[in-house]
Length: 152
Ligand SMILES: O=c1ccn([C@H]2C[C@H](O)[C@@H](CO)O2)c(=O)[nH]1
Ligand SMILES: [Zn+2]
Image (tube, rainbow, N blue to C red; front, side):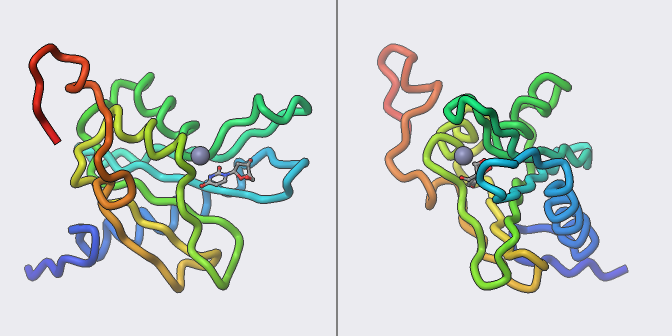
């Protein structure tokens, strides 16, 4: 059997599953204030697909992004440090959504700098793939708290 690798180093089936779940996850969004739905899907080494969506609050600052919802779900479900890919989708058909700075740092805690982050438009017809390293250069992570560390 021939397995063709698509961007993000995934097989065709995996890429389609990640896309479907990132788009589907938007249905879980609670976003009455911004009316801006975002969905996230983390694919783990054991091929679990962890979904998250943005959850807002009447006290606006208490809202949480889709990415961090998925991250917290993954970590508290025992999936840490074995993420293969993280994908997000908004509703815009024109542009591919990109993770905010706080979420980039939150991903940094649990993922390799080589993690592919796939950013979809609203119907999955467009996407951009960047590594976490590209999205968050010269980053600060857990290793930097170790004395004498010199990793980047
Ligand atoms: O990458 C992003 C960008 C924004 N949002 C959410 C936060 C807020 O609920 C709404 C508008 O910013 O979208 C995400 O979940 N992920
Ligand atoms: Zn965010």
